[in-house]
Length: 400
Image (tube, rainbow, N blue to C red; front, top):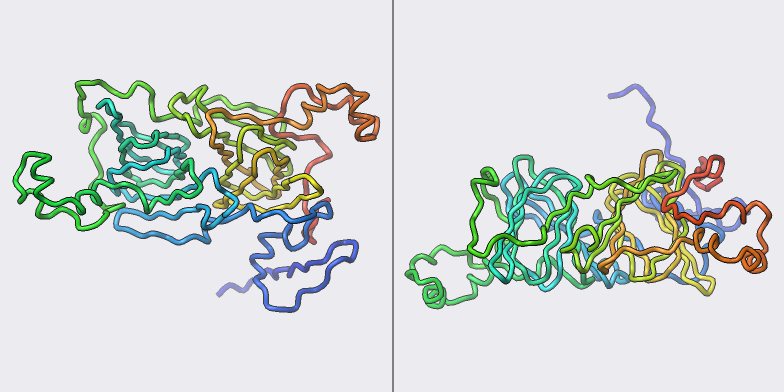
């Protein structure tokens, strides 16, 4: 047993520095309150009624199989998230997400480890590739594919272009075989019914297999050739947009041509800095937080605004055209994904908009001080940093 006294946790209270609020003496989850300081003590500028825009994968149901696990966030868990749904999945070394297809497009980001993906299109052209950390893949709707963990296993995020999607409700090869009479299978493939005596009796979903050999050892030549547009994209090999405070990598159909329905950005924010005030003019934003912790304030118009706290493994959401910004509230770099049901990434910068608008109009509209107008930027900075103007949280949990 350690002789060092354990560090006392300061119990947060729903009290602002101006005295509003009061002590919470009733039953409560203090650890949750510590994780959500901006819900316990909202910024004074928060106002009105805005739906919940945060959900954690840690609060989801786990589907456990020999060969791996999965969990998902859909409109069941986060009702506001109607455009996209996601699955967090892990495969053991050799573990297989079985041969399957679905009505939705599938976009994926590899979190750790390596996997082998395969697919075939409607013209009989095939595809096989190995993917590693930071790599993406995209399968158009209706195309059959598979995923298998390699030597070290893998974990990844799957994103689908329908908020109602559930990965447990896909079209699987084992499920179809299990619900097809054996005489039909025999007639279809031209082999005896006895060859189907041991087929699965229900959907396999994820199963354990041995680690596959080299990619060349599994290559199958198609008389129709290979798929012309690659289903794989190495996002971390892309030179980032660098600005004071962080970086951004954007991927959409302009540089990943097969990705017709999902666009994304990988954002890095340094401690104390922020993803600038902006909005998206093309669709809702679905977020996945990879590392660190931060907070996002969403502005919905008509005096409505609300702040949410996020940590690694959380999902965030911003409805179409709502203004928002994200601050790194932790001591380490904040990384997260922004995703959209769109073929192109698009955002509107509040700063850039103001910089490209007549200064007299800005001054008369906002009545701002003399220091602002000369500082407006005509060039967009997705992530911003100004020495002396960074975010810090004091020991009482409020910002200064």
